[in-house]
Length: 544
Image (cartoon, rainbow, N blue to C red; front, side, top):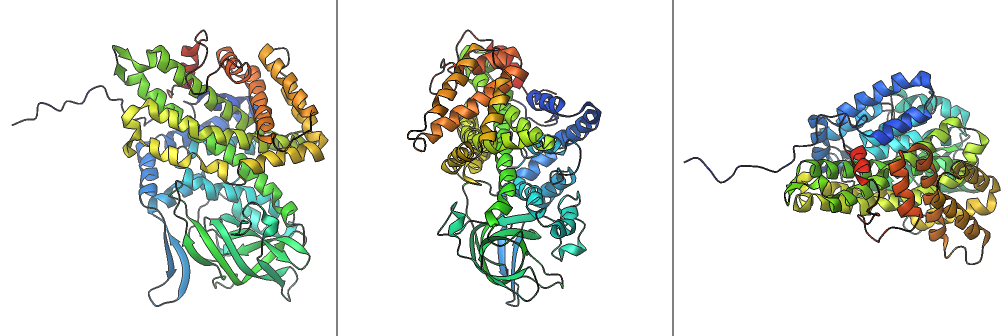
């Protein structure tokens, strides 16, 4: 007998077969805004190609499979030889290979490279955030290596290559290489100056032998790693190759893989060094200064990664509500749901707009832009990454019970959402770095104020927020205890300034009214009802 009780109705179609880049109006407009006109056609073409790949059913399935089949540690081979290898599902290699071939590790030497890479990173990590980690560290290693011209000449062409070579062999024999890093240790965490790993000089100039451990080392199958260790003259940066030039394995003992909340497809490990060969990067005793540009670049990727997660969460929520009917009409047309979706869309667009503005500052490279980055990057990293989890939670709820089911993909976004706030220094570290920039680098505050000042007079709520921020900055009493509050305002004022200048009036008006004007509740969906929320939601709808 044929079944007559199971006709599927009122379910949205899968969000597949679309251009993830072109469907993101805020991202596409940011690329047009920050790139030279001569670069635009080529950039649009490559980003749309990546967007179509990201939106395909096949590639989205790779992301699912990479998470359902997390990496496995193989400490020994069948004969008992120590090998310390991590085995990944084929989908992981496909994803990582696509990311490399899309140029997500090659930004430093091509025109508009940082904006183009940032946009690509936002697009690609919507498929699967885990492969963003090795892509980010490989990209970010370049400025640290440039402190040693010989090392940069040797390694930079490999790191910026668009060839993904997963073979386990000396880097000199490979057309492309990936980098990881190891800074944190059990006893120190973010306080890297508490590191106890020792570096003993060897006979060959610039080479050392490392003994110690690293509590977190992501992507342990990378070809090289930047690590910090205590040399005779203090904390120093070192390059640790995974395989030595003669083909033998460097001592790189993986003790275990971390069992993480999210980011399941990516391997994060604990590593022991015991007579591990390394080359010094920069001068002895200047390890933090050497590696700090790498840290800044990965912090920007934390902003971009959170913007990516938020965009995918909002796209899924708006898509679902576009098709789902309840109480006599489409969910997207219900005033209360429209308020929720608009509020989420504002958060997503503000994050994307800020992330691309920071990438453009890297491309500019002027003294003022670099000063701006010293304040804006930790402030953005603090605020944007903290907004990611509440956005993921609310977007999941827009799908109702469907959103709580693994097949929807929303639980994976939710598990991933706290990571970028933790990685590369959690919230307090970022807040203290902002204070450090304010106290030690007056040019950073001046560059920031020039940036936000470009929107003065365009919105009275933004003008008032700038004035209040200046009042807070003038009062240094108890500054550390209220650092989070201060950094939040710095980030919000910057986002408001950017949206007032660049976003449609409906978006800027809603952002300033809620985030800067105080007309906002404690949860998403509490925007003033008088705003043009339908236009804000339509702008966020993933239709290309």
